[in-house]
Each structure stands twice: as structure tokens, then as C-alpha cells.
Amino acid sequence: MSRLVLGPFNRVEGDLELQLDVEGGQVSAARVNSPLFRGFEQILVGRAPLDALAIVPRICGICSVAQSAAAALALADTAGIVPAPNGRLARHLIQATENLADHLTHFYLFFMPDFARSDYAHHAWHGAVSERFAAINGTASGDMLPARAGFLRLMGFLAGRWPHTLALQPGGTTRAISSAERIRVLAQIRDFRAFLEKTLFGDALEAVAALGSIDALQAWAEARQGDFPAFLRAARTLRLEQTGRACDRFLSFGAYDLLPPGLLSAGMTSEPLDIGRISEDHRHAWLYGSDAVAPANGHTRVAADKADAYTWCKAPRYAGQVAESGALARQLLAGHPLLQAFVASHGGSVTARISARMIELASLVPAMESWARQLTPGEAFCTQGEIPDEADGVGLTEAARGSLGHWLSVRHGRIARYQIIAPTTWNFSPRDAAGQPGPLEQALVGLPAGEGAPPLIQHVVRSFDPCMVCTVH
Image 1 (tube, rainbow, N blue to C red):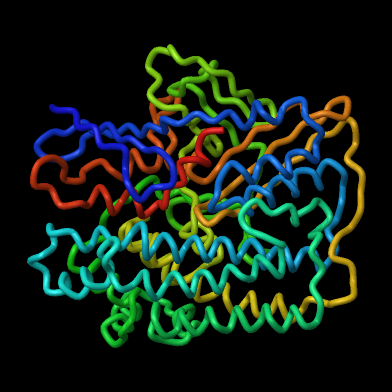
Image 2: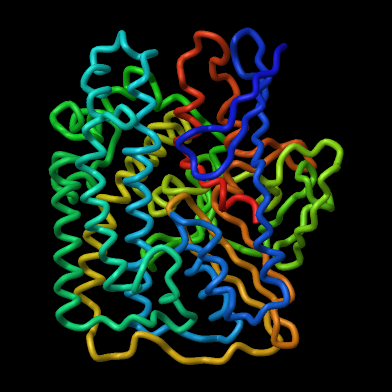
């Protein structure tokens, strides 16, 4: 057996290192290291509760809105505040804008450039894919970046700025929308729809969202000119629908009052979400403690010399079991037949995860059009309320990469405890006290590794779209 260390990874938000045990040219075991400790959970302790709204968006520059939303929900939970209807719709629009922009960025700039590698030069599709997606020189980024920039103008109308907006509050949003601005919001969404339909899909969004089987998807891809069809054709030759299987247990906190919360286990059996079953295991993290602790009672205290630790990341578990989070989990719990077919055939895979993000783009843009039309200019966008001096709250939401939770305790008018579990904390978690590897650690086992191996490890890692700066707080 030999040990291979890969890292730091490029085209990943933050720092990531893999330790791979290799036997017979294949990965026999994997350990995922999140080497950057940041300490946001400690920074928040002792501050006024509303300070969280200014601090937690700084956890990340590309999913700051999701952090804001989780903090706002946790604060609303402490005070029993119900957001104004306009504020709820505006929050959906703001979160969807960031999440869909993240999906687009991931596909074009982080994920697809690996298909331009010389390892694939013998495939018929390589020349066209390389011309389109090669890092720096590919033509795709020149098409995508202006469309993404136009789409993110929605943040100006809805949230004042991006990233690190302060518009999301416990009672809704601070940025009221006028009738003229609502028209401009709809126009920006329409322009984004046009880019998706012309360039990414080569078809109407509604037709993409309605694809219901693997055969239908493949037939659709063969008949279309678009960037997602190009991926599907390449992925089929590489058998990526059979690559990257993890635990086949999927968790979602629910999103947009549209996608339901819950847990989906093997056999497509779903159960309602019970947040009391969530825990964090510290056994292999450079943090004090080794038992599984509920985040409401959790702590983050550094133990840099801890034996058998290999990452700063805790190991979140649901009912003591590993769970994968992300767009695939959301779409499975929503009952999308195409994603259910993928998982029933080969479990969670590279192709399934990418397809789930594309389905989310195709289905959420029409939902955004509906939310924008439902906004009522002239009515309140924010409900007022007071944060109690003694309270506990939980804020659960979905970032682009998966389930995000904030657990907050207020004592004597100050934050006494603040614990955060981010999507990549779930997906890139280490082993727990029972020896269970995290989702990515499981997904890497069996892949070819070492000299001359194709870049399947890259595809699997990026299929989870890691955001390492969100992983360790």
C-alpha cells in the first residue's frame, strides 16, 4: 500500500487536501482534510445577537446570502417573529439568485475545465469541449460571465449589494421594491432565462425540468446543442453516472417553501426532518471532545495536538449516520423522477449531482418569475420584533451546496453559543467515533489513483462543489 497526498486543490473555494491509501492502483481509503481554521463561532460569542447579521456573511464571499438567511431565521426563531409576506418572497428571490449563480459558476469555471485535460484527448468530444471549457482560454466563460453579472444585478434591486448584504433580517428584508423595480427584476430574470435556454440547455426551461428518465435525458442530450448536453455526452463515455457513489442517504432542510425538508434513505424511503437527531462528532477533528454532541449544546475549542485527528472539520451525523447534502438531495426529496432514476440505478454519482443542479436551474427560474409577480409594492417587507435577553433559536436553510444550519443561544442579552453546520461540513466530514467515513471519503474509494490514472478523483471531488471556507468555523 502507498499513500498519496493531493492538495491544495485549485478551482476550489478555500483549502482542501486529500490523503489517499492506494492499493493495486485504486483508492482503498480516503481522508479529507480541511486545513483552514477560521473561528467564526468563537468570534460571535459575547456579542449582541443582531451582530450576527453583520458577521456571518463574512464566512464566505460566494454564499454569504445563505449564511445571512440562516442567521436571520435563527434570530426570528428566538423572538417568534413571522416575516412579512413581501419579505418572505424577497428572501426567496435573493437566496435563489445566489444559489443559481453558484450553480452556474461551479459548472462553467470549477467543474467543466477538467474535461479539457489532455487525458481525454483520444475521445471524439475532446476537441470541442476543450475549445469551449479550457481554463482561461475557453470560450464558455466569455458567454457565461456577462450573463451571471446581469443576473446578479437582482441583488442590487432586492438586497442593496452582494456579497455581505444586511438586507436579510429576522422579519423579512429591508429593501422594499417599487413597481418600477419589480418590472426591472422580471426583465433581469427574463434575460437570464434567455441565456440558459440558448447556451446552457438549448431548450426551454420547462422542457428540461420535465425530463423524467435517464433514457429521456440521453435522447434529449443527443438532439441538443448546449453546454449541459455536451457534458452529458462526455459523461456517458466516461461512465460518470456510475462514478462517485457515497452513502445513498440524502438530507435537506427544505428551501423556498417549495422544496421539502427530510431524509431520504436507500430504497427511496423518506422521513420527516427531526433536527433533534442531528449531532456533530469531534473524534477526528483538531477540537476538544470525541463524543457526538447536538449542535445546540456544541462547542468549538481547539486541540491542535490531538491524536488521530486529521482535519479541522467536525463530522455531522443524522441519527448517527452519514448523510449527503446538496441539490441532489433537494431534488430527490422533492420527488424528481430523473434524479430518483439515477440514484436507483447507481446511487449518488457525478452525473446525478451535476444533473440535479441543472434541473434546479431549469425549475427555479420560473419560480423566481412567479415570486417577483407576487410582490406587492407599497406593503411592508419587514416585520418588527425584539430579540429576548434569554432565548434559543435555530435557523435552517439550503445553500447552493446543501443544508446549512445555525444554532444560537442568547443569555443576558448576549450570544452565549453559536454553532454552524455548513453543507461542505456534511459532505467533506471525517470519520466519526464509529469509524464511518464521510460522504466524499466513501465516494473516492475504488477510484483509479497514481501515475497515469484518469482525473476521476477530480470529477468526484468537484461534483460535490466544495466550499471549504464555510466548512470550519
